[in-house]
View (cartoon, rainbow, N blue to C red):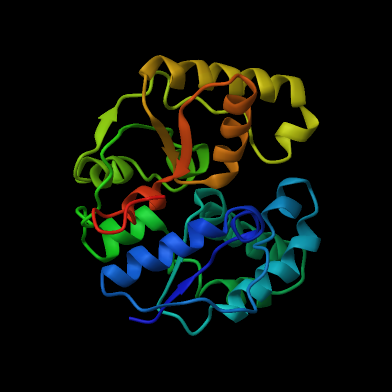
Length: 251
């Protein structure tokens, strides 16, 4: 299977270790993953801010760059949801506006083969035990796009429960939004920060050594608040735990 890594803007700019962990993990599982250098933004920030037409060239670029791959794997539930949930809407809106079905036809091939990481591991590879080792207490925050748009469900928990040495602690109010919401955190900063503080208080109540999510944008928001409140829980992407082994522990 020819597999491509779609790293996303946030990870490429701020969290390159997430991409390295993705390659390490998938390679360990026998997947030869490629990183197309021509990849750019999926257009989510533009689309969600109301600039739908400006997002269309980015969507076309995504479709062109990843056209020849059998699977596209991303460590971002929000960007995965952009492709799977909103690309079809973009195509239909273009058609409804009398601009023909070209955009819809261009985007259609990449939509069903775009996977968030935990989906790819569980649904495509059929793996729930990735051979990871992480001897710490961990709590998991299910991000909104992963939970509501992609329907990741129990997949991340299945993977975490099979990590040797890891104790998974339930997060109170887990399904409540952390308050990031992309541009929501900019336009409604006070509300966003208070929602984030609620989330952090729940995280702190678990006593977990680490908090993990499947989306670094939410983790950035939560992690920043934890730093300001001097909460000692370590924020990290789930792939960093899954890539960690006894022989090569997470640094």
